[in-house]
Amino acid sequence: MTIELQFWPILVQWPLLLSGAAVTVALTGVATLFGMLIGVLCAWSRVNGPLLLRWLFGAYVELIRNTPFIVQLFFVFFGLPAAGVKLSPLSASILAMVVNLGAYSAEIIRAGIEATPRGQFEAAKSLALGPLQTFVYVVLPPALKKVWPALVSQITIVMLGSAVCGQISTEELNYATNLIQGRNFRAFEAYIVGTLIYLALAVALRRLLNWVGMRFVFGR
Amino acid sequence: MIEFSLWDIVSNLAQAARWTVLLSLIAFTGGGIVGLLLLVLRLSGQRWLERAIAAYVQVFQGTPLLMQLFLLYFGIALLGVDTSAWVAASIALTLHASAYLTEIWRGCVESIPRGQWEASRSLALSFGQQLTHVILPQALKIAVPPTVGFLVQVIKGTALASVIGFVELTKAGGMISNVTYEPLLVYGCVALIYFALCFPISLYAGILERKFNVVHR
Image 1 (cartoon, rainbow over the protein chains, first blue to last red):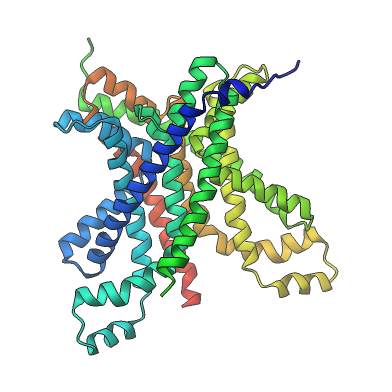
Image 2: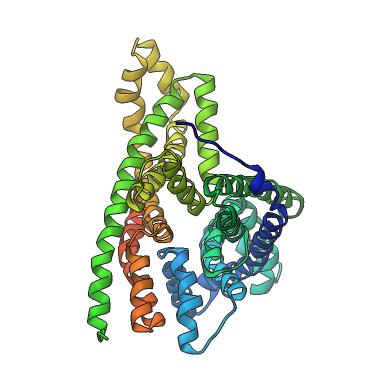
């Protein structure tokens, strides 16, 4: 028996694939921006904040890190409307991704912050820097530099995880792939093409973030 | 219309969670065996083997697990074999886990000083003997915490098998919430069951990590 693979019927649908990939990239971009922001805030309060806040953020981080992303997504998209919060597929995806990356990056950045030598704090204090100044100028930059590789791989994981968002009909790359195979029944070929695009995106994202790290995080 | 009490929901979910646990164990054990095989091949010193396995790892770490599941599911069907979601999910998760585990373990082996390889070589140990008597026993010690940590990833990964129709915890959650119209409660319970499965393992991995790290401090 011979298996006939035809990729042409998939490739002629390139506008769908392209817009899917664009949505995946956009989702990742937004999630990275806000996720990192949450990560820094959480990390700061887990080191410096009041006990209640520390405990609360600790629970948030552990809860997210120990449940699958798809369940978080379904909880947001199917569960929250029952509590009166109705979200579009796109905003539910963004919310779930931000919350997810926030927890992981909080844990990663905290590890970097905790590795700050005591002398740095003392030196900052002797220069009369306030707690916030100390954090922004003294603690955070080297901490980010230290954990940048871990952050890069976490952001890549979140990008790849966003494939699940197609399940709630967010029109990203996996959704586009599924749509194409539904039109021409060439499922295997469609998923090969889709998977290769993800691979290319992952490699490109890793390169981009490493470059950003070199240029803006390690640079000074 | 059947009425679902909270107890019904939880007990149904708990029954479905058995499949999550079973699939995790299959993927973790299978991934461990394949991963170990790949590790040995990678250490054997053949350039092309090293490259091929590095590419294998790159592909599995650079593509979504969901796409890997779909590819396996439709790919096996293309070969003319009647696939169940069971088979496809087990194979996909096994391959996925093997790629990650082999990469984790390679890091552990590489952290063993080169002198250990050279010393055992100078004692005329064969490659197999070097591995079993000198390198792997030392690497094993470093490998335990990240390997236990990876088990959590595997458990969470099995949730994706629901998408190709494998009835485990997440899929059961979807079905029950469709019947009860209480998605918030049901998905909340699903999340808590995953948490109950994963959190102790995470804690244990953390404890192991601290225990093994004491030497380095």
